[in-house]
Length: 245
Image (cartoon, rainbow, N blue to C red; front, side, top):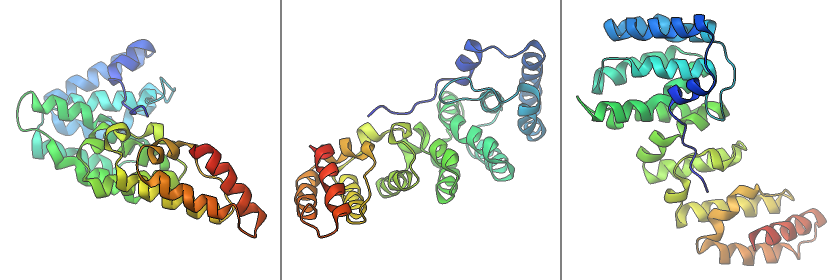
């Protein structure tokens, strides 16, 4: 399964250039933030008004990419950077929250090159996002930063939440390396519950289940469901068995 890794927002903006006025605003805003970090508190929310919300690629809209660029202009590292990000996240709307979350890998890399690294200091924002119900914010939380730093138990629960909320798993970073036997078991249990309710199983869980021992146990359970009295359960089990194989 491919990891969902956003490209650098500057790359996205270079492929779909902003209008001259928007580009001028963004360049000026970067300089103002570099000179006075607290300027980000007014400029970050204003990005949509100046840069628009056009879709640039699968990961970035113009305003989110511009906001990520503004965050990379912050001359902060470590705890001061994490505190500034927390304020922007908690006072922001969902689009602003997504921009903060999607910028985390860029900020983590940048601060490791000089000064105190961001490290796990932004994990509380990832956890806060995962407790919510906005599927787009949850997806952003499970980008490369969250996928690399969430403990195994929390990562598994986050993946399961994505399945419940019908967030495609190819948008979850790290699944190709972090999926393990326990996650496969959890997804297998979920698949059986769906079949027992006469419902189909999301197709994107099968690669994880197939790769681990949970496959054999689930095959037995689904085979038993093909003998259920309710026709919808039998039919759902047959479809699931076909997909699992």
